[in-house]
Length: 139
Image (tube, rainbow, N blue to C red):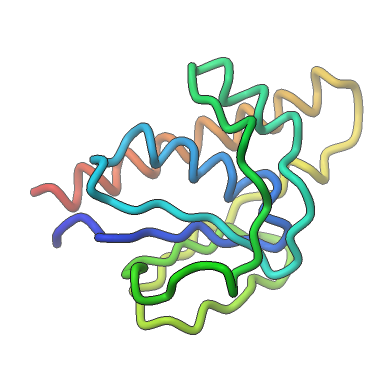
């Protein structure tokens, strides 16, 4: 299997998991791979997502939450849904579907450090999965 030409990370709010995945994928995948993220009910990029990616040298501070309808379907050949406890949005384009159900770190309550730790766990898990996807597809 070859690397995708375009990959879309999809969740509901496009505020945490999919934004983190987009930032990581841009840093891990070759520049020729177009990377997108979107949601069915976009809100805003969570400051915790910006912070935990910033810890790794990735800047998503200018990202914005996008609706799935804003994504050019013809440029996407792999869609990764990240929803766990909520219903994932649908992408109508012709694409391979992968599901990486991860708990929403934005749902974690508690101290600032507890919330950041939830975002770090999400970041770390997504990093492992995106690196594995690259390794598997480059063979």
